[in-house]
Image 1 (cartoon, rainbow, N blue to C red):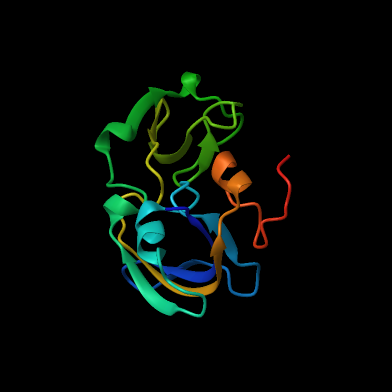
Image 2 (cartoon, one colour):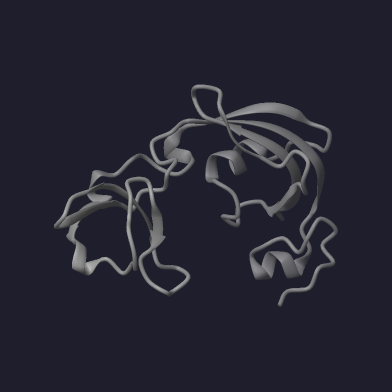
Length: 159
């Protein structure tokens, strides 16, 4: 079965109900079903929903950004850290100039070492989305071939 292109607005909340992100006041998100453009749990639960649907979607951590993995935490000598200047707990940086290099968070530091966490900041967190499906249409052959949506109308060209 050919996938759909779905356009939706959302508000994302953590388990305490705090708003983490929202598209309200901005452009809605447009994605190709099953192409990995949004988290798996949200993609799965939006399948088959028609335009005009408004609902709450609960996404467990395993289907969102994964469970927190202690193996993604490393303690390194400061000399190995590729960042100029002062670092503080909570700072985030990319580990290399390659755009696909991991982004890490400083979780502890002392004079000699820095402890970095490469888990996504939302790893281990169950998420709640308030979703408003704006539009649903069949994906074009080009979108299926390219593996991503070409905009809400399908007419946007790939670069």
